[in-house]
Amino acid sequence: MLPELEMLDNFRHIHFIGIGGSGISALAYLAMAHGLKVSGSDIAENPTTENLKKEGAIISIGHKKENLSPLAELVIYSEAINKDTNPEYLEAQKKQMPTLSYFKALGQLSEHKKTIVVAGTHGKTTTTAMLGQALISAKEDPTVVVGSRVPAFDNRNIRMGHSQLLVAEGCEYRRSFLNFKPFGVVLLNCELEHIDYYKNEKDYVSAYRELVEKIPKKGFLVFNADDPNCVAVSQSCAGKKMAVSATKSEKLNLKIPGKFNQLNASHALKAAEQVTENMNLARRGIENFTGTARRMEVKGEKDGVLIIDDYGHHPTEIKATLKALKEKYNGRRLICVFQPHQYSRTHELLGHFTQAFTDADLVIIPNIFEARDTDEDKTKISAEKLVESIGKNHPDCRWGKDFGTTGEMLKKEAQSGDLIVTMGAGDVYQIGERFRFS
Image 1 (cartoon, rainbow, N blue to C red):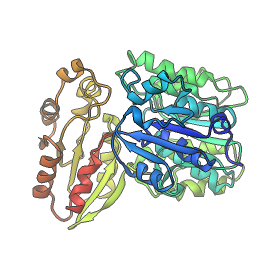
Image 2: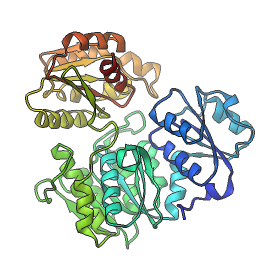
Image 3: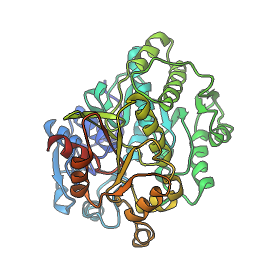
């Protein structure tokens, strides 16, 4: 029997706004697996929308009220949409149709499951997939919901199991992860993010404290003992508490590089211990893990130039990823094409960005990906200003202007033996794909 979910029992046709998103698409797959009709829309095509189409979903590109079928009975929407202006959401309200945010719907699922939520500023996707693979290997048959496509899950962002276990990536934006009913929480780190929503670090940390307070006495918390905010938040846990430290954790023979991934794996292993006795199999599952889409994902090679794509968009993530790539591909010149995500984040974290690119030999900044930015946000920072700031600490940082200009720069610069990594939470991966296939 597939996972229970109220919306799957009560509705026959669900419309998803932002259906190509890294999380919401998992629920679209789940609905189709239950035999429901699925329609949805997004602003652009991507590999996820293409896969959903192949499986029978009706996908519209662009948001229009006409996309909302008269036969649709429920609307599930991405947190990324603007509910004040999105025509499909407004049409659903006009028709008084039931609507749920993605995280409210996912929260419903967690009410029927023994749920482990993986949370933190960095590493959530990889650790969620690692823990999921560990429990699959240990024959626990979990349902796993991840914020990226996972090759081991048939290149989907969901793995549908038949047990009571649910492993889910928890997003802190707008305190979304508070919709979960967690049995266990994995807390990887806690460093100020989403500054368009959170007032300050204290406000940000308070959201994690609220999540940890939801853990029952019979539940558990695995937390990063090297992170002061995680240690502080752990005091609010009523259940079993287990600390993980980079210096004391078991070293695993991973297929993916980076010290940060060793720490991610240690968290996943400690969480697996709480729900399975088959730890040798769980350990093997983690060691066989090969990664997820857009996390140091090798895209291919052209004329001796290796192309990798990564989702990293916070300075801490960028620095750690570039260091890991430099160590793994020692001897290759490292060209980083970084697309900043949000004007507000770029402005607030400007000082941290200036120190993040040490391990790259050449940095190219095309544009800033606009997401939830106000006109005021856009007056405070520009890609040119970011380049200027990074250039004070880096010998070769250039403004790429746009994707076309950046692509031409790469054609002139990249030589056999080089490594190009495209980085950012937006659509920067397209630059690597254009270079590879040009």
